Image (cartoon, rainbow, N blue to C red; front, top):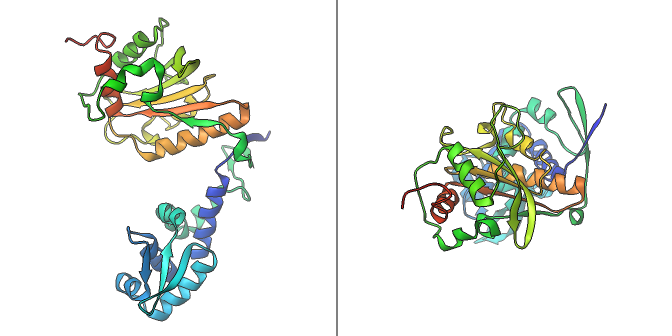
Length: 298
């Protein structure tokens, strides 16, 4: 039976897949694209690209024509008499993903796009493009949560030792006045669920995904849950706000995945969805703002 999902990011995946197909397994195109897309310099001349790649002027020009035609790079007016190319922000940002797919045709073939939906786990996922105006997903920070307003008095440079997950959960419950019991088990959708969180003057239902000091290094989706699906399970909760908390640095991939899921949930359910990340710095600020709730000695 088909499982319908809303994918508001399909255009992004289409562009990545198209760029990978245009570049293909051509070593010359790969090297020219990487030389132009990589680095802080916006515009690079053919001699500069030659220096980085070791390719001939003719090889660079031929590859440049193909890439510019597909708008993967931009061609600019000559610089000091030399043909020059401009990196495009989207393709520069997704450079690694594009090159990875270009070098691996089998992986590119399986890469899901709006025009090439894939089957996952035997279930057919149909992609539906949703108008952006119908999506109401809002990223929030700990400072914007009225329930946590005490953090506004704590500087952004706050730091502290990693806090045990269970102790942090109890601290959150104390702040929110949540007296329910939340026992951890492998299939839960969230670590803490509360209908007492306030964003502005509005009271909302919130689902928290917590990662304690048992998790090491920068947090990414693969480190969340045994199967790396904790964030996906979090968004199955009947909540309005979804917050991931970690005692250290959080990778941008977590933010990106939460954004996609929030947009999909908003589009599917026709309501505003809040989402955000509380990293080590914000966690330390919250603990310092509410020492009594976290049972810290003065």
